[in-house]
Length: 349
Ligand SMILES: [Zn+2]
Image (cartoon, rainbow, N blue to C red):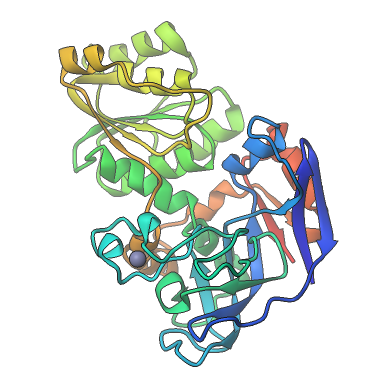
């Protein structure tokens, strides 16, 4: 089958790799219907995190189950399934505590599982899914093509945006600032809107992304950064800042922007993968009683909550996909995201 490998900085190749086979009785083989490129895939692509040897890449996919091991009970051959950006048993103590990203038996696409067997990356034609009963969520029916982007968003970006909102404690009537206008930031706007925020300020400098933010429920756009950005946010929000700030980038600058945009007593929910050395200014947090909560989003636990609304058409996060390419154009998909010609690229094998 074909699958994507990263060889180094700006070097993405689609290559022939072995077809996956079942290794454990809890495995499933899924034929990928759609995958995508994540903002975090751009860190190795740009050489910010170095690639020492070629390896498989991609961690978001939906697809059709082709084979199941003898112990798999929750999904069947022919089911359309959503996979979170990691695999997990969904039964261990960490999973039950709502932190399935810390599953005691889990792991990551494109690396080895706990038995030392390779697990495929998502940007390919097929994936061996360990712990299929815990990892995969099947839809009641095979969805039509138009629903696929919205379902694929549940694999990562929508659940991650939701985690930012939940971590920051967004409730009905909250004032919210969202730092970051990538797919996760835009989904965080949508999540805050869904949870009933009364005011949502999206910090964005790109007209196309501002438009999506407005569609997703942003009431205000701030294009300024740094001191000017903080001043503008405070001017919009009673002179004090936001109840809840959703940090969806992961850099030193974005975390600083987020913390300074919170009102005294406010809360920052952060989900941006840390890069470039963000640190917490404890004295500032202490002085203003600002809290910081979040981390790698346990999106598996959010799928059941969000899926009915996606299937009903009332939650449509797939709008973040603004470029649709065949898997054979995966190198162009990375380039388009790197050069900000696309917010998020959907790939069809
Ligand atoms: Zn677990």
